[in-house]
Length: 83
Image (cartoon, rainbow, N blue to C red; front, top):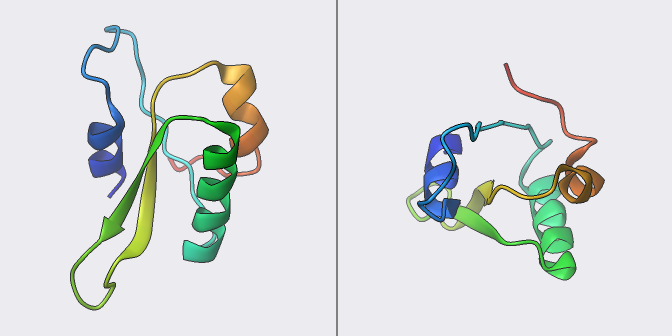
């Protein structure tokens, strides 16, 4: 899902030195709360929902376009980095 979210949210003209970073949420409720905060702040993102059973539309990932680190950090700093 992480790769899918990254691809869906990419504007397609990223600089060659762009890096993908994967962060972890505690679950769908937590992910939805983060998505709502991003929406409220006007931060461009793509919500990836799994249409198939057994998830039936559950929010599985959020893709963010590259942005200013100091802005994104306000919304994402509490999420652990997946290695």
